[in-house]
Length: 77
Picture 1 (cartoon, one colour):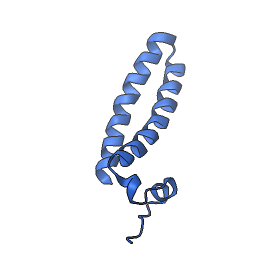
Picture 2 (cartoon, rainbow, N blue to C red):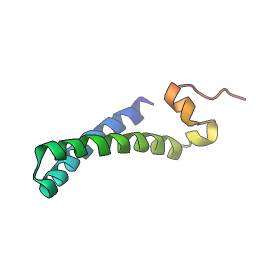
Picture 3 (cartoon, rainbow, N blue to C red):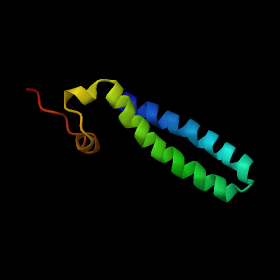
Picture 4 (cartoon, rainbow, N blue to C red):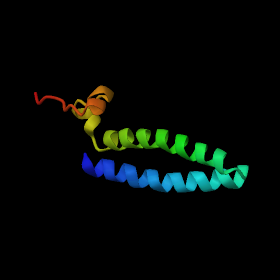
């Protein structure tokens, strides 16, 4: 799971930079661009993390949202 978290945080950093830049170009406001750049990528990073875990096949092995949030693993059957 540490690889997934590393990828998530590196993606988040890039997304923050791009999000701020695009929002600043459209609004001309550092404050508004900063707000947009913080909220949207943070939500997207969470979605990306669960998307990666699902694509890695964890969904089929007892992956649930609650297990992911509490870092529990499905018991072997």
